[in-house]
Length: 295
Image 1 (cartoon, rainbow, N blue to C red):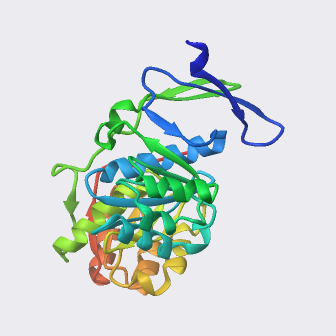
Image 2: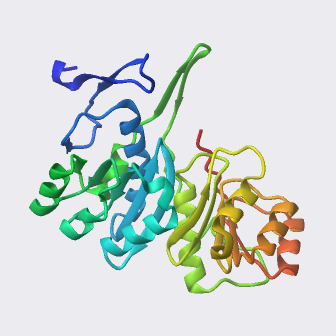
């Protein structure tokens, strides 16, 4: 390891020290300011999601490693507006990760963010960020190649070191199945795939409610009532929306979804009882055969 590849950074808490090591798997990027332990984790969380949508205009907001909102749009500006509108409170001082070049118009929407991450910035956008003391990070590695840089997850515990291969699970025609009597529309399937990709990268237990390729609610890391929590936040935006879960749902969850008029549910698996209940409540169900537990 070269000395320049080893860096001392601020830890998760003030009383903790931390270091940062670059390897041959590290993506190529530049940053206008030194990044902290939490900054790097948050940016990585956002890049994991944005890399799923590298070929379209996508925006994600992340706060303290928690994904707040994700949206796609006809333009980057539209995607960003959708993401901010989805969760305006947590957008404040968040990390914003986008898939396309940031120009001055987009930059002006990001005044309340703490860090902006993008493949490219125009000169005017950089001048705006520097004038407002906002950190910007340029990802030089093409986002389409991002997954090639994913490495085994390593967690060191007092009991030993855990090593796990990266989650490269993808939906395909063999595991993506419509199991309900009600068949989804093309638009619902597009939203379901979008919501599933977001849920794949948020902390379990994960519920993502989305419609028109933008999230309206993300619940993660909750042990109880996580479905109801997501539905309550989405409120009227749950009508005809997609509910994606990284875990199988219960009858109670299906009933709660029906009360909020969810149109389609996408889950790893569903029992006959769950499918029968969804059929009675006129909810379409898609199973993926893939769980995506994220600690």
